[in-house]
Image 1: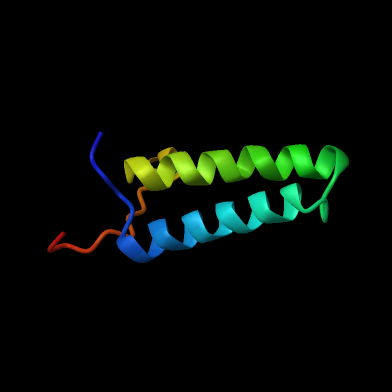
Image 2 (image 1 turned 135 degrees about the vertical axis):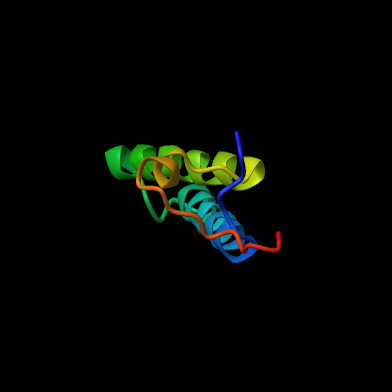
Length: 68
């Protein structure tokens, strides 16, 4: 599994995941929307930590620089 995510992409995904978690734990988002967003946050966090996005692979996209 070759990494296909750059540092900015990974950082943005982590920031979004943290923001969703904060919104959930402060009860700003609740119900079904909260569950869906938490699942998305989990995927964002996992792909950021691994550096690989399966969707990017499907569409042949990479945000990782050539020198990385």
